[in-house]
Amino acid sequence: MKNPFFLNNLTVGKAFYFLSKKVCYNLIGYMIMAVDKRLIVNQIYSTSIQLFMDKGYENISVNEICRNVGITKPTFYRYISSKDDILTNYYFDIPEFHPVINKASEQENDYLQLIIDTFRNSFSHYLSLGVDLFKSHIISQTKGLTQLTGYDENFKNTMIDYIEKGKKYGQIQNEQDPETILEQLMAILLGYAYTICTNPTDDAAELSDLESLMIGVCHAYTDMPEDVHG
Image 1 (spheres, rainbow, N blue to C red):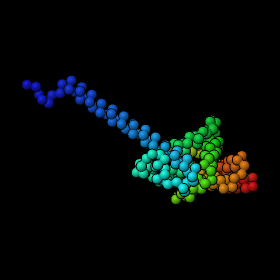
Image 2: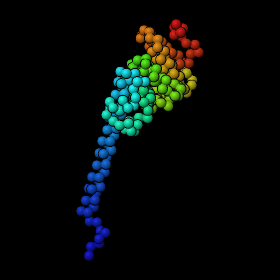
Image 3: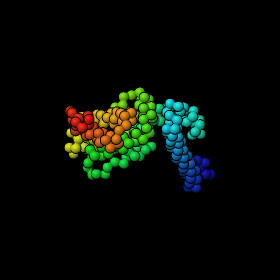
Image 4: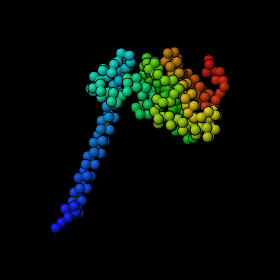
């Protein structure tokens, strides 16, 4: 009489087959869900930004965003914490939604230039939506502009790495820690972008002055170059 609990090779093979099949189905399901989430999130962002540009940030509600995307309000809040977060992510999560910030200089070991190039791209990006949306973004912020908590981690880590290497190779003389230097650079960038938005001047002069301010921070000048003050 055969042991009822004895599993022959065929039974083991069948069990393994069905288990593997179930695991594969689950993995495929998770992958589809991840892709769907990415598509929905990207659609929410692209649609919202376009609506903000067309009608103004204050004139667009979450309900209108949902209607244009074709989703329900609960679905919106499943992926996005608030309408304000859309602007915050547009301006700060640039590597994820707007790769322009990664188009930095390829000059080998010139980390100061990499920092300047990255912030030039950031500056252009901040101005790309115009003064009204940038004002709305600043107003929507409940934390200080120098806090790094809202920034994309990849951007933050990359910039800190550039600063550390710049200090190592003597390209950055500022003796403060890299995160403090980055906070100062971000404060200058955001403040300068806002000033330029409200008082537009020549683009070339804007970028030249911004670079001088950035270099001043990296070299810890006690006085800014005279031409920066005008």
